[in-house]
Image (cartoon, rainbow, N blue to C red; front, side, top):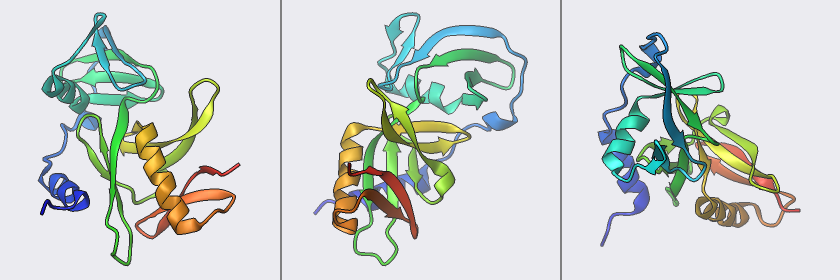
Length: 184
């Protein structure tokens, strides 16, 4: 039988070697790069989508946020890029059902695995037209991921199982509750 998703993600998280220390790299700005991270998570360079996932992951590993701006950085270069919404999208969620203390693990479109532990990682923000409150998860260093619609519906299902039909829906992870939204 296949290993449950939660255990698979825990192993990936443990094996993951981390990202370059972009928070310690502060070269001078070299200029702007014609690169856009679309709101659906696609990376576009000079009008063409980057389809090679290893290249997208490489760029994602050297992405840095300063205020409301995003940069690709190395120890010697810093190039500003455009991010339409959040640089990442959460594409998968798993929980360790059955344990006393439920944990949620999220996977992004670039392979980051993030455990939801702290309220500072989670916030609701307006997205779409008309604007609707959507959860966002901090991945690392101020870089956020928007929770995809599929993952959101999975979280709503779990929240309904846990909370019944109350006015507000919460999911639980690491002993804390995180607001998904209102049932109105």
